[in-house]
Image 1: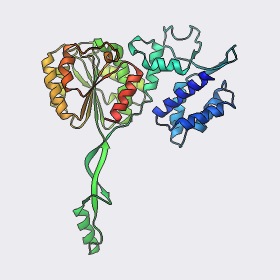
Image 2: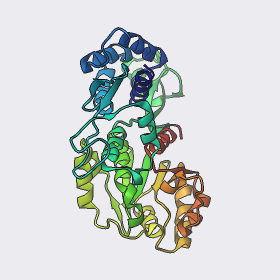
Image 3: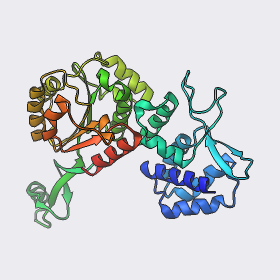
Image 4: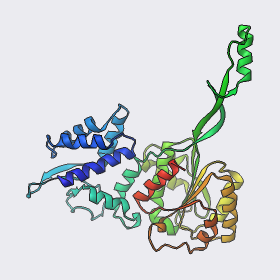
Length: 358
C-alpha cells in the first residue's frame, strides 16, 4: 500500500505540473477509490484517476498524455509477498542494457525511483532513462509573467479614449458616455541561447528538448539560438509539434555541433542584428569560452541593460563543490541575475518556475 500511495502521489504531482487541478483532496479521493478496485487492472486505475483527478473537460487530454507518459506500457503483477506493485516499461533504445533485462521486462515505477530519476545528472543516465526524462520535459507547460503592451483595449476604468468618445458623439449627436481605455498585457518574451559545443554535448539534446517545450507553450514570444562557433536561430525548427522531428530539423540547420564556444562574438552579433528589450534572457552554457573573456563581459553588460532579467544555466552548478572558475563565467557573472543548475529534470522544472515568476 505504501508503494501504491507513493506512486499515485507522484502521478498527481506530474498532473499538477501539466496544468491539471489534481490537488491533495482529489489525490485522497483517488486512493479511496483504489481501495475498492483492482490496482493490477490498468483500465480500473485509468478510470479511477480520470474520474477523481480531472476537474474540467480541458483536463482530459492532459490527463491522457500524463497517464501515457507516467505509466507508459504499464503492466501490473502480484508479488509473492502479497503486496501489489504497479510497474511500467522504460522504452530502451537499441543497445541499452538498463533498466530491465534483455527480454524487455518491466521496471518498477515507484515514486522513489522516479524521484531519483528527477535529480540524476542527465550526462550519467542510460539511453532509456534519458528518454523518460525527455518525455517528462515534453509535458512542461510553464507560464510566463505578463508585461504591459503598447496596444489598448476598451475598459470601464482607465484613461479617457478621446477618439472613440468624439466618434460616438458625432454619430449620436450628443456625448452620452465617456469612453475609456487601458493597456493590454502579453506574456513576457524569452530569448534562449543553447551552447552546443563539445563540452556541452551530454546536455545539448536535453536543453533543446526544454527549448522545444518553451516554444510550444509560447510560440510568439520565445526565440531560441544555438551558440558554438557561430550564432544560429532555431526557433522555426522547434515549432514542429513532434519533439523528435523538431530536433532532426535543428540538427540539419546547425552547422557547428561539438565545436568550440565563442559566446562573446555571438552575443555581439545578436545585439547588432536582434534585440532583447524587456525579455528574459536564458544562457545555457558551462562558460568554457574560446574567445576573449573581456569581450564576453562587455557584451554581457550590453545585454543586461536591454534584458528584463538574465538567467545563466550551468549544468555544473548542480554540484555542491562547484565554483565559477572558468574565464567565461568570471567575466559574465557580474551581469547575471540568477545562476542556476541545468543537469537534471528537477533543475529544468525549477527553471520553468523561475521563468513563470520572474
